[in-house]
Image (cartoon, rainbow, N blue to C red; front, side, top):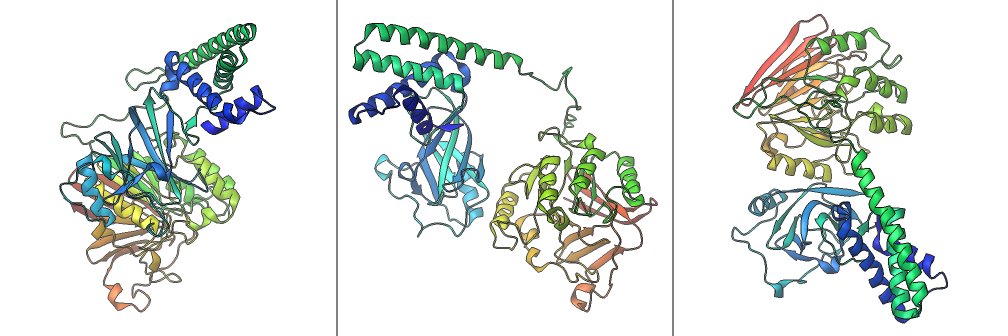
Length: 524
């Protein structure tokens, strides 16, 4: 995609390299816009991918929300991007307007129950300023379309730009609006503008006729190419799809829930010296596959030896579970400290696995479970403390989730009794239970522990392949936490097997020899 201003500059530079007189700049801009309008009339694809940019002067603030005029079409995506870095995007989820008013409470913003769209006289009342900005950019947000306006929560900051992708018939462009970066489209639009310019200002009949023929050929090329692209794109559907490479999701049971969702959780499962070439890695994989899980979750340190090749080896070993789209992928890893030890292994992590969102942390709905994967490393740009942007993302996501079960995964545990790391990572002690989570899975310490703190369960299970650590049942001199240690295993590697229905969650710690060393059930 390119900005309209960039397309205009390219066309003008190609058509009038010597420049335009000041009084002709605006007419030429209008001709370029008309060329885009004309192309839309005949090329359906060009009506499906408009992107509008809303500068601060086009927005106003209302009840902790940013409000803008909705474009005349089907809105397909809304996001904010940093003015200084357009690649730093936050995608907003669409909900209905009544739900948006309720969600505003999760952001700590009081909302009147009878909010309606403001009158026209209220528009432009207030735009974002550095003085009114939130302390940091929100990493999660929501929008609703109501009474011809887009309502965005939370309100955007002064260093953000609101972007809207929509499908429909577009007739006006601002400089920041985005357009398909297609050389055929650019050529057709440029020749249309040249023809109109010759017709209105150069009064040259032969030149106008010549440019008209050239535009017609360019437009025909564009029309043919767009049709060809549409023809060769395979349209794969689940039922009876001959080209489908993975089975379609199991249809939900009569009550709307899958039958017995089964997950296997592993963490710290490669060897610090040999990567995947270890007995422990092999036995862990065999045990994982024995349970035939629907999905695999990991708690980080996917490359215990800090090697990019180990990440790629893991992706190869579990290739049957790794897809390139949400509906295909069944392998959901977390970042560990060893996955960030150097740029090569970090890049391998981002490219070898399917990672939604900002990739470092994300959420995925696997009904009846909503999984939230955090980045517990201190290098996380959005922070890792309870007051960080990452924590706000989790708090809001948990507040609006409708899933029966909400599970949090992070590499570094808030609590652990293992020597050398006891009593845990204090930065990661967030109020998970108060925010709506049911339990938390962690790694980093190469043991199995179940720790219950104030009625909330923390599972530490980095025991899947790396050299084992040692548990201190006294919790390293913290008697108030010693009573919270309910079960542990530090003599043999293993995995955690989880089962979910709408009303029950089962957690089993299984050693390599098949022994179940711990088992709990949670019910709704």
